[in-house]
Image 1: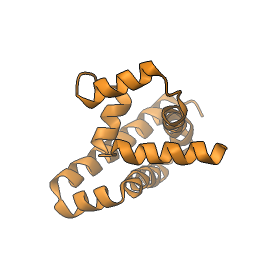
Image 2 (image 1 turned 60 degrees about the horizontal axis):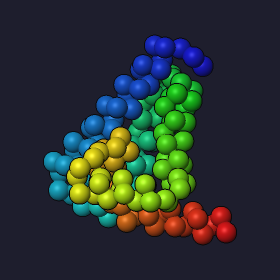
Image 3 (image 1 turned 180 degrees about the horizontal axis):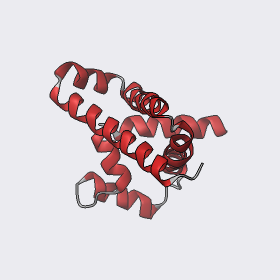
Image 4 (image 1 turned 90 degrees about the vertical axis):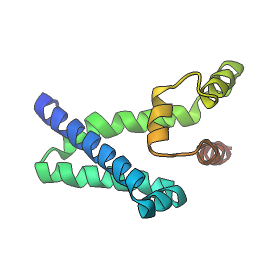
Length: 129
């Protein structure tokens, strides 16, 4: 499972698919509207496209453990982090453009609005109760 070349191939494919989908969605009006109407579907299409390209290359397990697991942990962490004063202040600073976090850059490229992410976080917190 720990093969540097396969990890590099898997990472390169994921980055290229991500950049390709973002470029196409910014240049094609139909895809831009679809991305705004169904943002989760857009992310799922990126993940599935990456999976099929990597499976074609034979490096699925490297992708699953080396790329997808950290992304999953990043999304879970962002959804479940505490909502304290410092976090709210940082969110306001990012909202007015003073500070950009890596997660903010990724979500901006995917055009995932903050309110849709907050709805998901609220749903998860209600499901816990």
